[in-house]
Image (cartoon, rainbow, N blue to C red; front, side, top):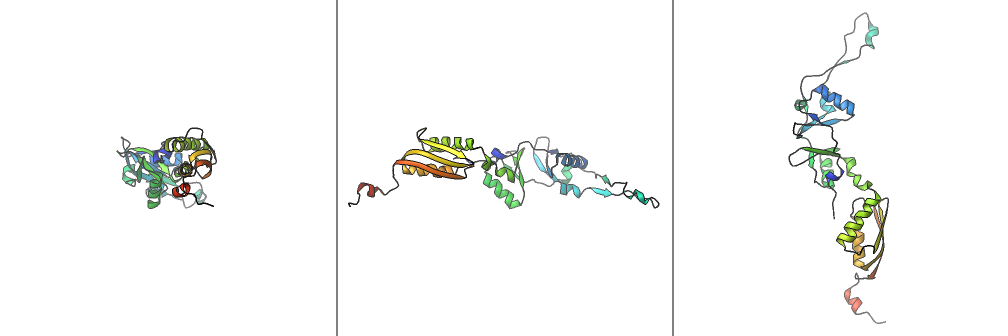
Length: 230
């Protein structure tokens, strides 16, 4: 049974900044893109660290213009001025960044987020190059798949590939993730296996098993061969 991986739900369009970006550049980037942090990468796309608003707040110095003694009405007309300190992203970033491989399972990503109390992870390849980002909300994408996609995977992966059921013998309908199995199988154990395997499919919320069977092979073999006389 196919298991969903980080690469199936991650966001690939990630905003990044170079390691030589100035503090002013980083402030502008975070402000204009309405994000709270940005990954820092080198010329080859390798993740070096992360700069967040918290990192920048420690660097920014706020100064209020001097107030002339006889012009107190200037109090409200002179806005604070921001002085960006010298330095680059490489000097203020937090590193190493929390990352995960694109081929990792979704439960592994969830455990890593929970262990480090973070809401997102950077997704990297074997060379630590940035491939995407995965957030807590991305973990739930598996449950929001279209019903048609769920139906196709149940038919292909459960009925045809795993159980080798004759095409058309079982009808599959899906509504809001709830799967209904109708039709007939040769053996009762096959019908039960279809139900259990369908429950394991990503996005399935419930299974209504309406399958009938020609032979109930769940009963003890000796009871079928040696029925008790009346």
